[in-house]
Image (tube, rainbow, N blue to C red):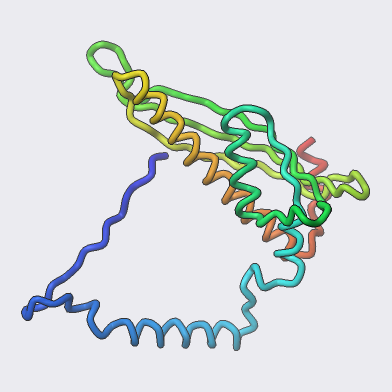
Length: 196
């Protein structure tokens, strides 16, 4: 699945200024404030404001396999989880990474025009104090990149696709762990055992 760049268009008013953007900021800010008040009045609590979520995420130690993608996954997860290295971890997150690379579209010389990089990450969260599996899951992501005639350009394009795929997989794992912690870290023992 390739990434698309979404560009923002600017509209000019007859006087030459940026019509919709001039004077609209105050209204937009008021609208956001009103929406926030409405959500809080309805009892909505942001995910990371739920007690225990942020401290729980920062107490996770990530263990990834060797290799470039494993390194990228560990770095991205340490970043999004805000790992507190000054405190001992309460959980260990172990990753299993499966990477695929498939050609897409062939030129007249039978060389692929693009490649699709697939990344599947299985992860297991273990409570260090008990050694028990607390949570487990799997995420998959796909990115594509253009083939290059020059070897260096081809290597650079593939490494960039690995970085994008690792970042997306880390984001998905982060959201899943945050949702699990927001639920009190319960109700997942059966699911974890079923996947083994």
